[in-house]
Image (cartoon, rainbow, N blue to C red; front, side, top):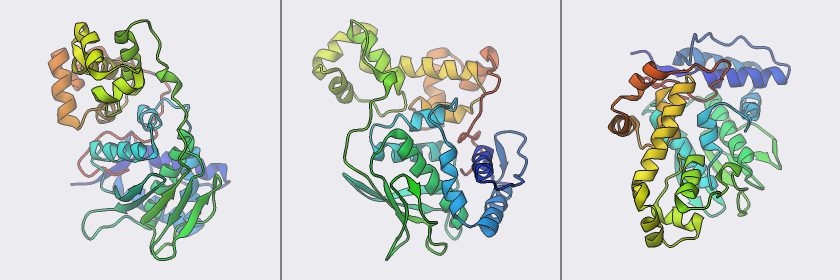
Length: 318
């Protein structure tokens, strides 16, 4: 079976290279996907002609002002570790061929490795692209004093003081060390706790970041209400679990109706564990699968761009 990759990431690279005055001919996709080998050849050719540094800097073309719900969900992360967990969940949803594995974590650092199937590790060009995107996402989220190095033994510093300094070592480009300052991240303005009652305040918090791994304890911390008291106050709305399920379904329904974002990414954005979990719970609440709901109620949104969100296909890779 032919493997596919995200056309959005290739388009991101092409835009970033154009800003640097580098003209490229990207493979045509005809949609959200393109053959994996076409993407592989494109990145390899860019690296051969221009080195790994332009690919590392490609993430700088990302923006927090985006119509892509996956980017929005990633940028809603409450900690740097949460951002990596969300990225890993997105990889699982899109059946990515390559995965970011966290090898070590601490309060102010994280060590990750970019891996592939046995005998088929990512190419250095692919390592550089994903490393640059993750670094850019951390910076966009407001993480302070980011320092990134790549390689084993004596790693190369690739990012510091807001600047990509050097490419990862080509022969050892898959092991990454991230460091940052342990300062609170800026609050997401969408999550301001408004409303006069706990139900409306809870709905706003959950709707602002449905991809978060919400628990009653985390919600009670955000609202400043003891868990048992909060559960009693939410009883009329079906309790914490019932209200969370309804908010996630409403968010998914709106995304299905108003755009062409892949169903898999909508499931990720709305906080479901995997695609079967999303389909099962959505059908339980609407009596329709996500695909059937979109077919019945879709309202196309002209001009929406997908940056990181391919439709899931077996073998798909970012």
